[in-house]
Image (cartoon, rainbow, N blue to C red; front, side):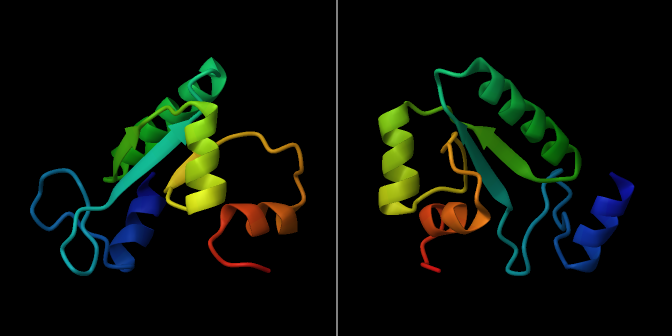
Length: 105
């Protein structure tokens, strides 16, 4: 954890107001959202563990579990998400980038 904190400090992501959460270069609190599928307790628990770890390095993280249709709409249709945890069935990196990013390959 110490090395990660050092890297974030060096990049300028510092908790300037000492509230326990780092801010970006514009002073905006760094907030992340992890969205696991609400029907999979393993993914929900994994998201909760990531939340715990990232909170320890000074990031504000919320876990918002979503139903399958909402997750697909946010990730594949609107591209409005921070992080989603969903299985796709195709682990090819090019496929994942082309479906999970707002830009095409």
